[in-house]
Length: 408
Length: 84
Image (cartoon, rainbow over all chains, first blue to last red; front, side, top):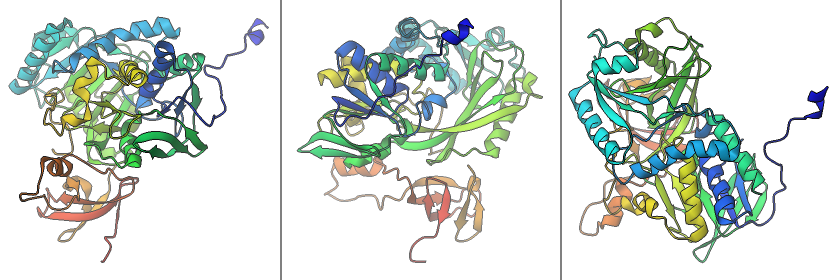
């Protein structure tokens, strides 16, 4: 009977939609909720609303494959991802929520000399930033991932790999719920099923947001909509150098634990890990045309099954259980766009995160919160400004995920 | 998502025979009035319409023709081009 007394508590409070807020965050995913949480916690901006069109984590935040790592290649990009990786254990204790962070390490597998060269570069950059990363030959890969086929039987035989020790997996739903709980406790209002329909601008300054529940007066807006961010920027007549592509992911039936490392194969375009439930969670590359649909394809299921069983022969008889798709907003240089006060004052943008927005969501939110509260761009966000494309200062990130994009 | 694209030579074919070219952004800007700004807009900026969008596709595994179609990006279905 004691159980009846301890009624389950709601993680976040339901709040009425006010007619004015200090800041409005569009997008109730990891990036948006983290920004709201840090705005309230670090900068004393507690009068914040998070507006979500569907339900929290309905977009990329709940559709990714949970892998976290810091394997970026450029020296501008890596420090933030490194900090992001260190933030996970901190968040777990701070938000008092088990995010199921498993530091399993990530194995990048190369199947050609070209890919080995990419991994050599990545390893050097990672070591420069004190991230424990080492270059391996095929035999060493097999030691880390015993199920890997390193004979010459696969279509692309294994040349070698890179082991990134600090990487791992985090449960994505838990992150969304924990951040929502943290933000709500700080006084942030979370409004689900509220669609943004327009952004009102007066004399080059954001004046408010039109939503399906009514108009909200505000002077600061953050666009953190992931795949839908180009649609929101269109409301202020801005176009982004972003292509919205669809990515498909799938899980197999639960299997006994046999894979304690998350892996990425460069040539096969396959990545995955075994979840705590025993399912192998894997994803492939993107459908090579822009779309807003989240329909899945038999063609990719077949392709994934072929590649995966080529690489890991013991998966041959395993069945896929579920398949889903999500949107990725790809930039030409595979790095995010984090900018603010352009082209109108009070408008902030956290977009272009492609398929790697999960691993650094909380840290991106923290820096965007700092940017929004102070109106001063943090040092670490300088490489991510939107004007870099105009100035031809693109980040040289392209080689890390080999050849992804609508152009191949 | 799989869908069909109508090639003017081969008729309706599976999308997997095609390669996506680009959003139809008109011809490339040329001449002395082409500032870096205009070039940037042409090369990088995308409207990413959610709904009907005019696009160019290349029939890679077929007759190797460039095809112009109207496609609804919300459900990936091809729409008839206006004026036909």
